[in-house]
Image 1 (tube, one colour):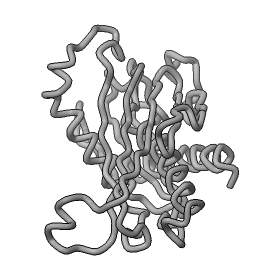
Image 2: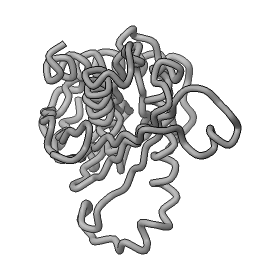
Image 3: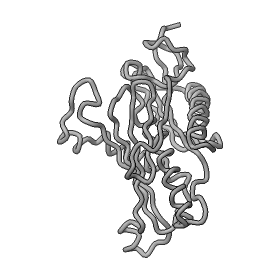
Image 4: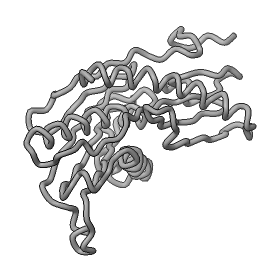
Length: 240
């Protein structure tokens, strides 16, 4: 059995912590740390619909996200200009938005727009998964403020969501890949899972060779266990 760089067991996640209300201005905020990956998540509320919904005379609100990495989040500094043109960040931005919207009733949200900013201050693998998990906490905190202020009458969020990575590294199925593992994995995947156990999104890439259905099933099962633990932590932090 190969030994992981962190000496973790194959099904063991890195230490995870979530600190809430770190930004006095944002309606919801959280700092999530998954091992060496640290992400600040801020939820901002606008008291109207996005312009495109108003122009099309649509009902209900909207939730979107923005993801970025600070210049020195990685071992080598990346300029801010290069980050603006980063297609990877744009793809992850869309992923986070899709994931969050999957559990939100836009009609219950009313004419409000929520933007979840996820900024990576230190990266060591799994930044998109940490952003989704922490971003959801910031979102729930913002929803709580809308409820307490009477802006909405019912919580639009129907379920919890979290995300984690799973992969085959040195022919071993492992959970929550750090950078060194992700960089050399034969097969790696990101899973977004709801509290109900249903899957919201699956991103799988056979970087070294094609994979079979059995491998995917095994990865899904391990990812579900990991996300269960993350959702338990979210509920503890939110006192729910």
